[in-house]
Image 1 (cartoon, helix red, strand yellow):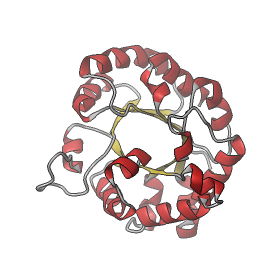
Image 2: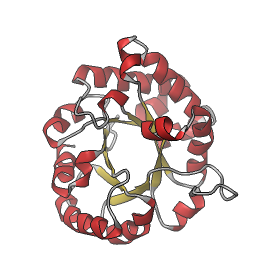
Image 3: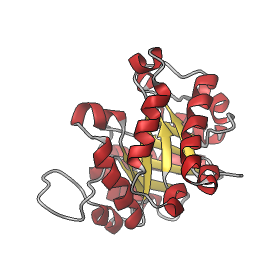
Image 4: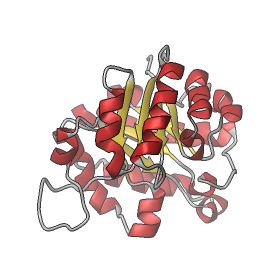
Length: 249
């Protein structure tokens, strides 16, 4: 089955609005002919500006997090309807930094993923193991737990609307990259977990690789049979390097 690749740039806590505007103006002409889907994930402060600047192009804008409730006494949080109002396309959920630094749990993701889908937004669900878990041969156990828990309340008919990003935690921001064999094995396993729920969804769901993706390794990773794109960190902060990764797709 043909799945359109998605190259998404997670800016994390980088770029003021002015810096983001300079970036998007440099990026748009470089990806105008892209045959993949392209997305940027700016900080909340730059979401509205990036939606406006990217409007009419092929670049979508995603948030880096979301709360599952539509409104309420949740200081510092942002709801799905708030993102919809901005014309944001979706949101990253479950990134390892959110899990490790801010205590995000699989149980919270059980609510966040359906809340995004119900609002018409695309979730990018991040999963991945630590270096200790990989060395202990616990990668599949960890992925099984994360995928099954986060998708537990998603109807089978909506599973393919979720994007899953496999990001080995030991490769995020470290310069280490999973070997092609490691990436393919893990991502094929993630797809098999979705297949257990629905064969059609397993064939259609897009599974991305993330973890020190750069222009010089992107082509090899993106050529793997089960890899449907990349969630890019540091290399997405420079328009030229990010565009080179898009071109590799």
